[in-house]
Every structure is written in structure tokens, then in C-alpha cells.
Length: 145
Image (cartoon, rainbow, N blue to C red; front, side, top):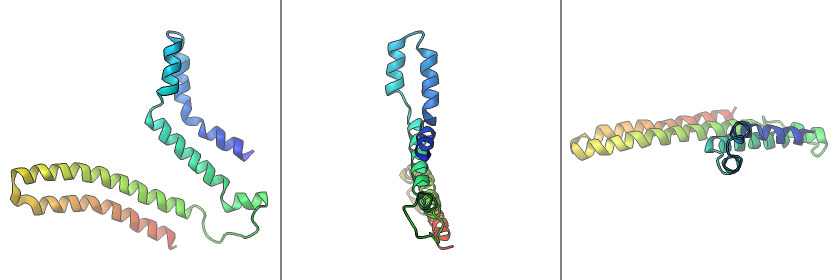
């Protein structure tokens, strides 16, 4: 039963593509089918992978495994602590990458025009890199509680 629920939840990101297909198939059925098969954008794929990952994690958590009877040992730690730590570090690193991309490009432009401003631009790029460190600190706090 849980496997069926996990599969159905994993199919949720495909709903917008199917709605687009049903709307567009009246005008050009072959083109609509091609767009449905090859036209899923990256956002739907990322959301689908996240939902599948959470569904798989939900299926293998210690409480679910114990309910099935495959594991007799009671887990003393929070099964979602590692997931929370990974999400905090991952999202912080993505934000850091976006921030360093924009500040680094601006810093290179400033240094090319005015070489004496290297120190100030380095400070701004370093502040953007601090975002990843904050996410790492939060993940250590989550894992050590």
C-alpha cells in the first residue's frame, strides 16, 4: 500500500504536463505527444526527483521498517536529522554559488577597471561564501542535538 502511495506522489509533478497535453492535442496531436514526451522542463524533473527521494526515505525509515517486521532494533536517533542536515547544507551551497557568481563577476569587472579595489571586492566575495559556512554550521547543530 505504501509503495502505491509513494508512486502516486511521485507522479504529481507530471500533472501540469498532462494538462498541457490534453489542452493541446485537439490542434496538433502528434506535436502535443512529442512535447509531452520530450518537453518536460527541468523544474518538473527536479520536483519529481525530490518527491521520489522523500518517498523512498519514508519507505525505509526505521519506524516503517519495524512496522513491516524486518528490523527489531529501535532507532534512538531522529531518522530525518540527516535529511535536514543535507537540505540545509545543500540549499546554503546553492545560494552561495548564486551569490558568488554575481559578486565574483562584479569583482572582476571592478578589478579590471580599478586594481586598487582588490581588497574591497575580495571582502564582498568572501561574505557571499559565508552563506555556505552558515548552512554547514546549521547542519552540525542539527546532527549534534
